[in-house]
Length: 232
Image (cartoon, rainbow, N blue to C red; front, side, top):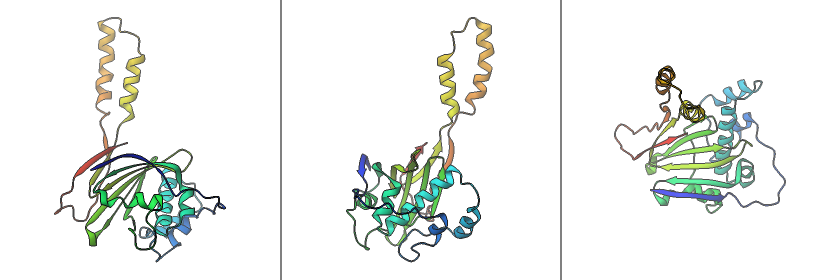
């Protein structure tokens, strides 16, 4: 079931000295064995290779989200504060009892016995970062769709528990086409109408949504879950 959009005051702010941001290499080595999100295989080598190159927007956003999981699993509120907007918009789809992230973000879930989000994959598409993971022992599967704002902090979370998700890209060509039609002067005659109709047909063939990402559950072949589509 859907929970309506909620504005979460993530980790009530305290007047504390701002900690230093973790480096990309620290991400692969920090808090190993302390419940932090595990990096992908060979990620340390990838990070080292990227050390001397300029990061893309998607790389920055992906590492931002990985740092957040690391901070949350370490119950490090100070580090998490750096990465989250003070008023985070949160959407939830799934069993109400599985709103673990809400409790983590608000500080309601304390101690070391809470739910640990260890993403199996993290993929970035512009300002949207998709992470998925599972708790096989409890037969739980989750997907997070994070939105990173232009100032480099996370502004929105869409959370899905025991839900198959498909992420699609809505082509900007459709919006551009509609704007051009609205701005165009009225057609003068049939000839002008005929000449303008040909490119419109060509443009319409490229305005369909494009699938960017789909849930990759290991048990998808023999277990069915509700499915949703997220358009970005």
